[in-house]
Image (tube, rainbow, N blue to C red; front, side, top):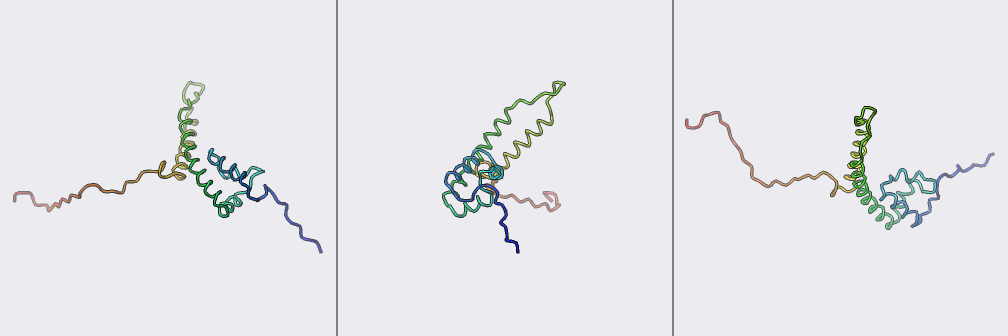
Length: 145
């Protein structure tokens, strides 16, 4: 009878450390996605990061703050993108594909910033009604008759 073999473990060890947690939060705040961060060989996988958030209140709080900071980074990146001069094609005209690509980059950052920090970057919805309501009844009978 063959002995069972354990599958080879991949990725970084899943032991929590404040140094790894700080690096994850720093990279998030700088605009990197958690998906990209967790693909680095020395980083834990995404499931481990979520587990750490459940188990370590200090990491959970730092992570939440890093996500808010990430919204600020996205806003800063948008101003850089907007200020870039578009390249010209061989005829001296603006490359429309490049313009659309930049528009997509800005739209993605606007959406992310609005989700990460909705009070500052989300759509403003005013549900207050400040005036009266006027009702006009039209009877079909002309005035004065």
